Image (cartoon, rainbow, N blue to C red; front, top):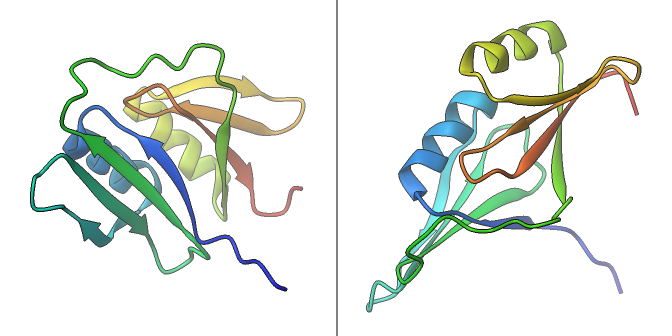
Length: 124
């Protein structure tokens, strides 16, 4: 039996705002969309030419407030070939929420508060 990871899901409050963030911050764009007839939710899969699996953003119509992430310390990680340029972009976007200079990594927060780790290509 062989398993293959195909996507990670994040529930988002404002789908368009989140899609814009992931496009600008990580170059991810829509590869697939699921919308049921009743419009109760929308699922959008994001990816790019370097992705081995997708990021699934789920918007739920009945959600009337931003998600409370509580003590959720789950994060996704992205390796990048030009760490300095990525850091500059994310600094300009104002989304860097934590830097660990000793490890040579940093984290950005998306519009819903999920943390995304940025790692130089040659580390870890």
